[in-house]
Length: 137
Image 1 (cartoon, rainbow, N blue to C red):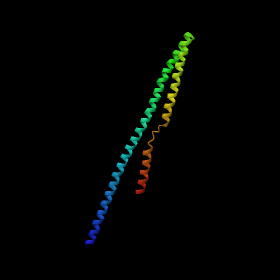
Image 2: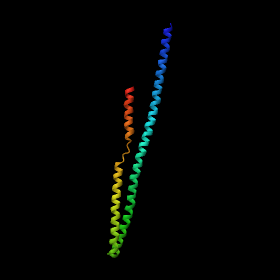
Image 3: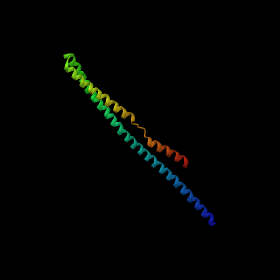
Image 4: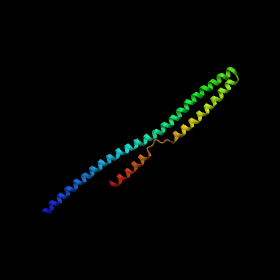
């Protein structure tokens, strides 16, 4: 009679520990998802800093381009007005600013092309988590 009672108690303990394990698994899975979301946010934040830098260079290039356009406009006006030295100087300045604009724009576009907003580390980690969950279930 005693052994039957002990067997029953062991079975109850086993079921309780199994339910505790399942509960722990659910809690750990939720924690894992929260951690993965935090990692994704951090990774995207870092990529946005690079993107902001590229956009800043492009904006600077656009501003210099505007100045170049103004100088070239002044050169055209001066050229039409005098046909001599004043317009030549304005064309040289406008051409130099236009060259700087092209260089800055190409640099900014180059930086922009290198920025990848896809959270690579998080995606790899999620894939590993997926494999891990498949193995334990």
